[in-house]
Length: 149
Image (tube, rainbow, N blue to C red; front, top):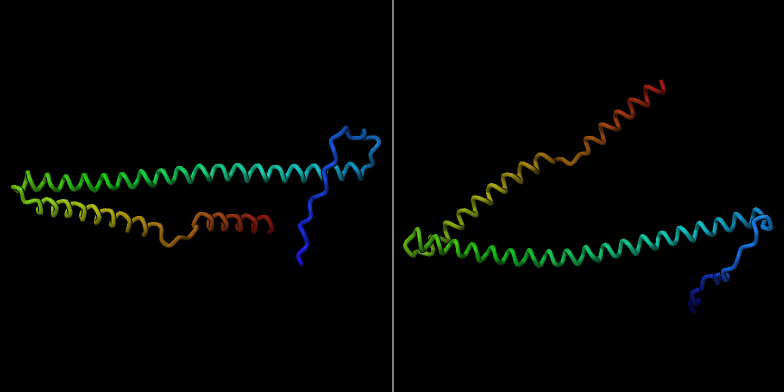
């Protein structure tokens, strides 16, 4: 049978502490230690509360941002649909299908441009080696070797 959880010892009622000259050094060290550990625990609890509050706000903002992105994407679809119809009516004498092909061709060109830019960016970052950190380590090693010799 599992043992019931143990409660922390009760906190003594607040009252004026005895004057320092009446307390031994051991008592003072214990008091300082207890106060320091209480302070650390309270700081940790404060940090947890602060982080959880900020995470909550970030999550709410992210959800609203995602909804805004979805609505913007739907609006973009409608705008592109309208551009395709406009091109079909004005440039191709009512042949709506031609407007859609022109719109699709424009998007394929934009996709090719974005792919080319992404390819250049990926090649510039590959392989992911921390060059600056390696260089700093080499410099540190050289400096230590000079000082020890």
